[in-house]
Length: 235
Ligand SMILES: [Zn+2]
Ligand SMILES: [Zn+2]
Image 1 (spheres, rainbow, N blue to C red):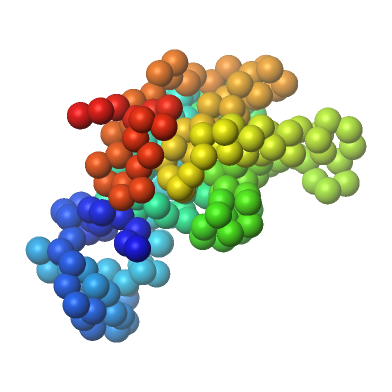
Image 2: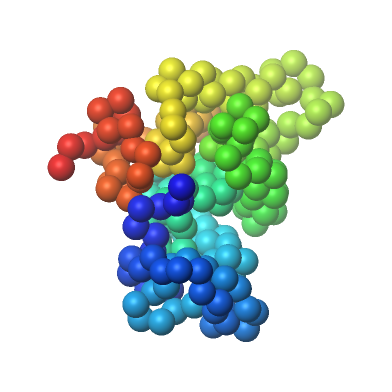
């Protein structure tokens, strides 16, 4: 099972060609690595360097954006070449985009530290967390965001402890009602919408969120559930 029907080069964004497994030397770090797809323009990037390019993309966009709309910020991140269609880095990106939109909507946060902390905590959700431990990483990422901005901890009392759990719980229920298989885009969009609602209701910070989302990623998703997905648009 491939990750992405149209895997793209993290440098130029061109689709990668499938080949028999080949040994490459990474253009970035010089390490030898094997891969089964190659960029037609000859870019060779190892998985570790792709991962750090993805995190750099998240940091760059979230630090500089003026948007109050976490969906818009996330789409900017996931449209950049390094992020794969299904990628564990969504577990960092969802919370990071929420933090940026929260800051731009007047929410107070020690931004740089909060961003690092959200990425560390969200990034602790393993690949395939949805299917393997019943805890989608996009939901975890909203919980990390919420916990960081409300300074919750395992010792917090009452709703300060309860609300991050409430948020991840609501996200997981909404995702479960749609059903599988996995889609990092669908679950990120669901989770963010629920986070935006809870932040407005409980923290009084009004971020923006589109009333209707039309997914632009379905043609890259081998497992797209199409009409069953709330964001699918038939082309
Ligand atoms: Zn390339
Ligand atoms: Zn490398």
